[in-house]
Image (cartoon, rainbow, N blue to C red; front, side, top):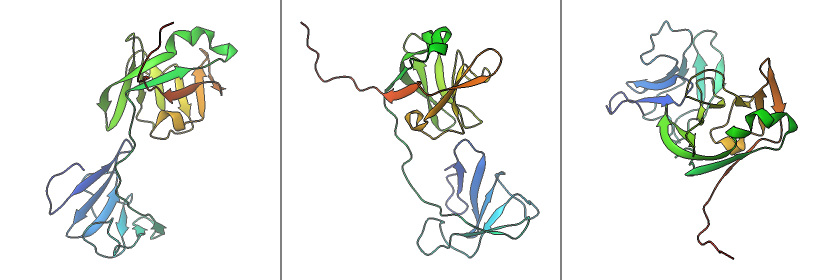
Length: 191
């Protein structure tokens, strides 16, 4: 939610720069905070309702550009949860130059509604970029990164089954790259 006013609430879809807004119970999905009626990139909810997640609301949205009806169900949820740590590993033979990128990443901050993870030695970051791909790089928003998720990502890194790495000339798929939550054991045993 990007606005606290109850009369005209505005909700932002994370990362994709689309907004759901209301003006007197007329709901709009647009890439603008305050869409105009002439905005041909907007969708309007067919019918009036107080909030678009209520059962009485229809899921019929009408495109202003071509009057096409699109069924979109708006739901309310908590969103994904993230662990404190992820373990990143791979055993692909072509990944020797990227070996320093593998290891443990700690949840360090949030950026644009999604968490950022920093390698425990502070050399690399993992973040969800504006293009909806998880990126591994030395710094945030420094470029396309060294490793990225493909195709467009899911909100949690382990759910992305295909990863690519940069070869210095193009992107190459690697199915051995794995990202899993790391949960510290309750007890340790020394022998």
